Length: 291
Length: 325
Image 1 (cartoon, rainbow over the protein chains, first blue to last red):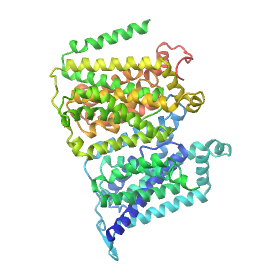
Image 2: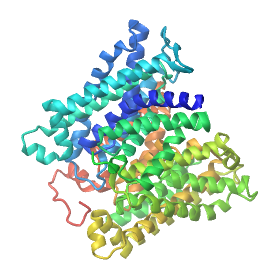
Image 3: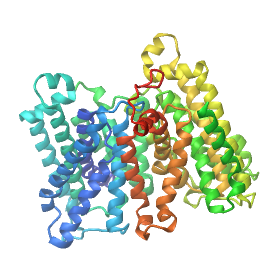
Image 4: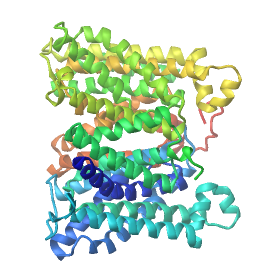
């Protein structure tokens, strides 16, 4: 029983961070109607930035949250403006050009980082990296708890942005119906760029939060892109609440899989969930509710 | 008429190639290029003509390759039997994939195929008793000389392109294009989208599986990361078809040769002429190539051939009424 609760706790904590990354992708999905297959790679770039700040600037990763996500926000806006947007005007047999472009961008990001930093595993060892505290007989990993807390905070900020601010409402409007939003006077191009930037920024935040826990190497982005879209599909494309639930579900499922089946198959759990969702619940969890 | 002469000349050149060039290195590049003609054309049939953009073509390639490999490890017979069994095996997998995925549209379908390819890769890694896991399957090649493999690959490519061109010009071809253009309208006209999509995926999978079995026999070694690879099989197939021209018959063959030659150019630092770091950055070059192709050449060389020609002749060419767009 204890092991079960411990597993659940670990799953929820990591799930919160997964949810942050998934939120980014689902936002992009909602507004641009494409899967951003460079999502994990954007996160990886943020991790390298955080690592460099730690290595050379002695800056604690959690303070890098003020630097890396905004930096990736700008990168995201540039990517959208110069690489993805122009594709909308090209008429071709394959409509999924934008998705392929994100694949290319993801690959370029990975290989550029590999070229600069080589494939060495890097890690950040802070004073609290392996600290834990106990509540009852359950041990809580300090970096993960802090990461979870910050992830919750950032998610709350995102919700305030989307629900209460004018720009946020514009984003939601563009996601619901781009043409109607343009008629209402919203600059859809700019909103799309903003959204891609926010999505990249959220992925960056997830990466920065994960750095004390995860090893860093150029290929770390791939599995996270996969996780992000499993969460997106699980929660329902474009549904922010779905992404949160999806992230938590994925985190817990992975944790349970790691404990009760095998550590090595942790990534496979996500794949299995994905195929099950596709076959039995194609619209995602969103279709179960009316959100 | 000029077009046919050009095609005959190219085919004759390809036929004579291994006799003219005796370097095994260049023969290898052309063999791989011919293999990619098959894979690219197969992807093109499913995606360019039937509109089902699969991001997981590695499934069929890997199934074909492992069928051939397992012939040796599990059944104790020569891997050449895999050439006979690999195609049908992949066809079956294609049909099952269709049953699960064809109800999905657009991005969902893309992701589904991508995820299922990853599932196959993970299964191949972890089911060690069956597939030897990351150890891979190693066989001894039957022929020392690459010439035989070259002609085998050429025969495969020729058969593939010929079959597809017959299929596309037949009624099936029209049904495929109808489904690509507007699936609901096609259904309304009485075209069973499931049946024709299944036929398309089965044909596509058959040849890709054959190519996989050929790969096993030719290279002698496979492992899950190579044959089920997302970037170097699935995405490569997409690029081959797109750079050549999706939705055309000769697009993928052209694209295959371009992609393989370009990749090898970068990997070998332009055959030793360029500085060493070019070779280290070859994967980066591949990624940049993806971006450039999608951004500037979305219809491929064959697809945009008229536009490209007009750069030469500087005359304004009206878009053809009969071409795909």
